[in-house]
Length: 53
Image (cartoon, rainbow, N blue to C red; front, side):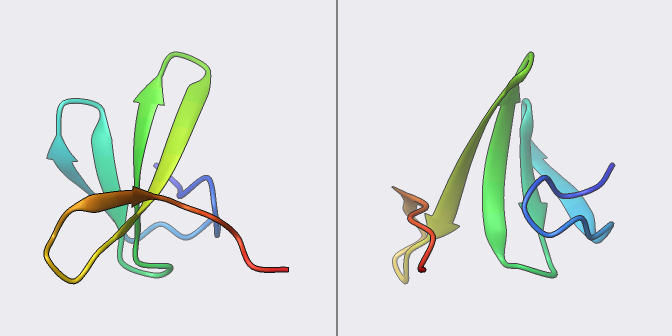
């Protein structure tokens, strides 16, 4: 499986339909065709990803 953000293949499963990309350091969830992307805060909580630029 490739990351929907960077296209990398260094992706690991962290939960049910939850994945983490070791190339762009983002976590994402797949719900059918919908993908939700999160950054991981210093305390380990998930924050909605807001792209810069």
